[in-house]
Length: 339
Length: 262
Image (cartoon, rainbow over all chains, first blue to last red; front, side, top):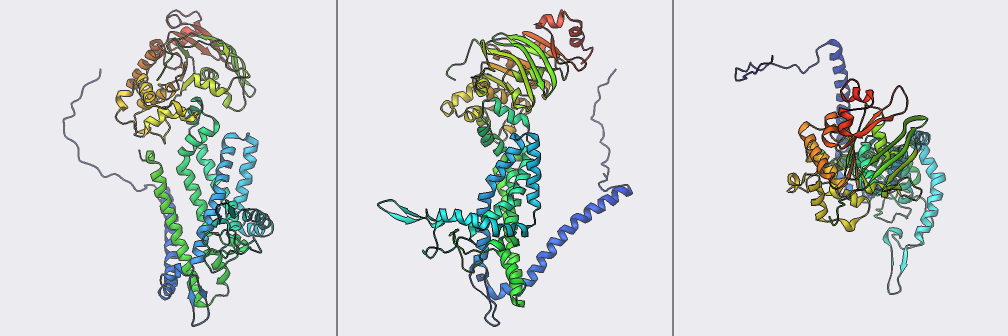
């Protein structure tokens, strides 16, 4: 026989709940995990502090021109350190890399996850992961000796289209033209080549993150879309991609982080020039902060090295900003995630 | 919507066999689903009833390694015919899945219209479609003032009725339901059952269910599937729901519907 209970009685006093681990093993485990996460926080803070202390004098001497100006001179007494072209170059190359790499990565992830027969999918996954493990010096040399001639050829083809004649008007397409209006004698060392190198380097990471996101999707969600009569492409565009957009954006950002900081590979394929190149991507004139550091650091004067530290700090801050911006975009793009 | 079918189509399976790889999972299933009738498919887990349901709108073939033999006839036309586009089959034969799964990135309205967008039928997109479909799924009154809210803001039961509305927007002749209430509370289950009964006036419905009471409440006829000791699943008994539950011919049916196994 059950009983109805009236619960109008007294409530006993609240008790202290234990949140810390109790047993020795648990405490050790807690300590190890806490230690590991603390170390990464301490390391990042320490690096940031070190960079800041080293670069303070450069910021004081150069002011805002450090970021906006285009001169670099290490002659004692006449020192001018400005990274405008390098800063913009890093951004431009990253944009080109993203444009080239993201569609490739998403298509590959879709194929592996939804279309490829199992053995093919396995092999493709391993190969793409291997690409991620490729040392960037190898990619740089491959870029210099193999990719550059190929992309130069594409560039030449693109360049032939830079001038448009419409009968009543003629103009140059800025993106495909040269800043000085003259025909170039080389198509190597351009931001276009560097962009493709970056694309190749970020494809594996974006592919593997995207594939992971795709594999976690509810299959019945996709089946529902197919059951409604959707074709593969419409289901991909309207259901799979929007639903996975947050995770895919995350993968793209990881890739962007690599693209912005990429050093050696770009160093080999890009002609670093301390003169800003806004959008003439086929011109053999580019910039990249990380490559600048690599180029100058070894033989830098003490003031120059400090300037390079400052450049590193700027790159660091930009990467942080990109990550923060991305977090905002991801949240905005998926209001349904908050529910 | 302009014209909702009132006399629904007639669906029939003839000797349907299914394999996954080398494993034979369904053998010679021949069932008749007359128009405007609700047919319940019952049986223990793993007997192949959900698999069978998926052969009825060619969702089955999306599984790699799936094999098929037999025929499925919609108004006497073989839906597996060489000239038939599976997409057209799925337009005529809608499906509701086990777990409520509205498209998470879309609003309530967009979910209802999702099928039209997915199939490029933009010309059919209209406010009436939204209202009619939601009314037929008996959810209109609950959502009419918040059509632009995210679909995931609805409760589980409401989400499932939204999924039904999403299928109805395509105006299918037949609706397949794969345990549509198994993830829902009793109140939501009752609402969906009422919806099924109302919908059977205008369409043919096939529902897979593990709930014996549900099969008795909503269906006109019942098929009992059983797969014994690694043999492929078969239909042991098929007939009027009343007979299957109260007067079964096969003793195994009697045991199952009375809860002796499964």
